[in-house]
Image (cartoon, rainbow, N blue to C red; front, side, top):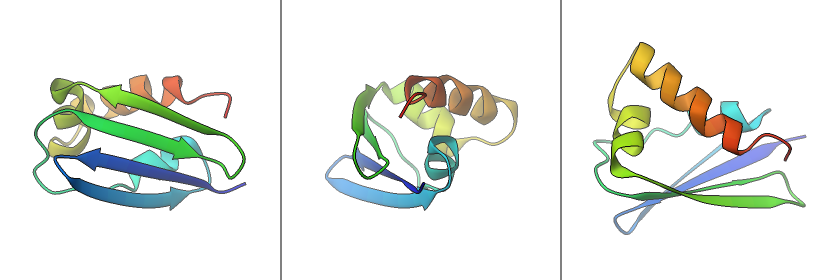
Length: 82
């Protein structure tokens, strides 16, 4: 089953696909994101949408290493069960 992740931040939309929700979120590659984001993950029949705080958005897409891995794990837990 393919998953599609969409991130909307400051009037820009980024989209990526992956085999799992975590892979789809990890495949998003926005540049220098600051501000709240709306993260939508869909598997074709079900869709979940979450508002992400500026701190988490920054950790997910502007950092590397442990900070990013922890933020990715915490966000992917929100989309488990899709």
